[in-house]
Image (cartoon, rainbow, N blue to C red; front, side):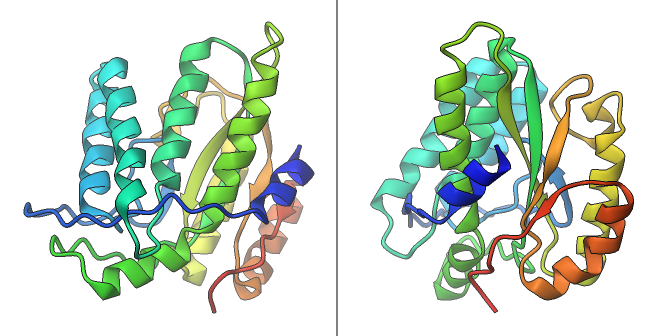
Length: 238
């Protein structure tokens, strides 16, 4: 399954966006794991606020509202020409469908680098350049997840694929924190202990990401000790 995901990551499609929001945006979340509660990508103001509102809706148990907001966050990307994408929202939306499906599921941690984070409500070149370049690998991850689950849903009880995003912010300390958390997650009895929406425990198939290679070298000893599969995706940025 990991090979399928990695192969599809090479076919990057862009869900583009660029709407400015007149409202003050909260600072994006930093280092950590998320399946919908933490929001890392602030490239598009409208989509970013939709994701924030969807997280609140899911915490309140209003999954219909969350579904609509995440769909809106992805749709907001269609009119953009700056390179921002709606992959984070698309992954959270697919994860929501997986949780609601009552199918068993297996998880993959997708590590990426959001950069230092900037939620300037006026948008601007700096924010778009930051997130557009650093979140491209999430597009391929979503495509792989969605295609795999579409096939699996045709078989009652077949396990689905659940993606947990892991933001390192591109620093060694962040990469090490994510690596150690992934190791703990693999042994956990309840994902919610890690601030995730998923209940109980689920097989962790591996971790993909940790580009550039310097970060992968930092986390390899931790991953090897835990016998966790680490699949590097070539970094799209220096």
